[in-house]
Length: 308
Image: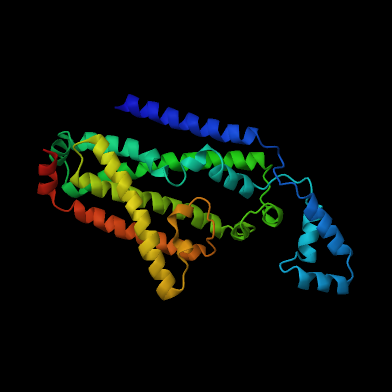
């Protein structure tokens, strides 16, 4: 079993490293779009008189401010920011097929493989000769939670690679102005709180997926492949429920747009402008899923009989 898991980890690691490196190898250190037109427009705008500028603003709604134009002109030749590179590699490279739709599979394979092998053996009977059932359930959850590290390590590699490629440029302002990077990215500039919330949300979200998987395995762990498919489908149904049901109700009764709680934007934060709402929502999801999972394993006798 350990050899199969080791081969899996090596394959996942190589796919991640190769895909990120290949994507970055086709990029120059400055991956801005050709914004000569923006520079020309900003130069003309700065040379306008006050009357001409006022007329221009009325004619072209959403025209840049003087400060923005000065920033665009002074930013020519700057390397792309970390945020642009991170967003691009997560949405345009090979990883776009993994995050977010197939990210659960990264840890589902080793998780389901390990837990089904354990539950289909006599391990629990020998365990209960030495320790209590509650301790076994605690160890089962702790053992299962550790597999989210696979996703976290991949994200850590993408982050480090993006930092190096950007020459540690952490200012997304220019990319927001000329590169179609979402304005929500600006909340990360010079503020540590969004970073903390970003990683806490990802961890809570992944742990919620583990809880869902443990619920599935409680009732079906005889066949590894079937358990894998059922766990994956259960997570997809959870996505649909949180977006269609929860999101719509929040929009209807609280005026919170469904995009603000969209789990599919967990890695890129597109359209997410209130980190606190996103954090609170994911805390609630985790607590609910944990409660259901613990409830599913409450009966020791039924659980042991299911494994026989």
